[in-house]
Image (cartoon, rainbow, N blue to C red; front, side, top):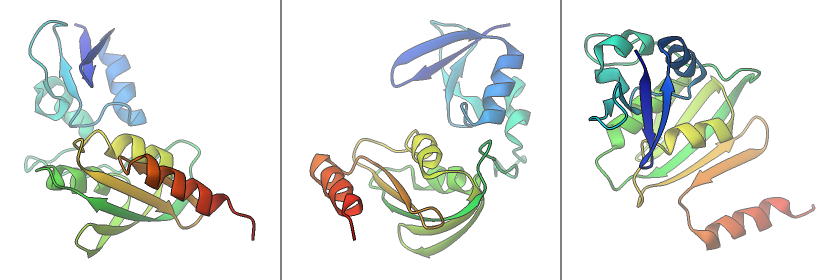
Length: 166
């Protein structure tokens, strides 16, 4: 059997079951990733496909229990700030919880401690967000930041501010 993955309208594959399982372990395929066994067939979230479901460590209630570890990353403290206007808030929180211990500070602001990086978090969490949703991740342990969909002006302002010499 072969598997195909659809990302932003593009179809990738075919991949063997061992490749797919490895991708899940690496965080390259998430429970919300759209997959199909037929390149031209219907795509569905990976966690809804019986053959793949157990790879995500989901209970029958659909809650992710297995934590993801970014290879080579040490535990770090993150501040995650979002503006989620879509209906993806619950999916975002579930995806975030897969990367470590999470505490909600206030609406749209979380603290996370986990073995990952700001860039990995941005790349993975942005797949859950829509075009109008915004995301800023600050790695408080390593003085790093990553963001998604803040706009070109905010992008430049962040780079200018954090790039200034003391």
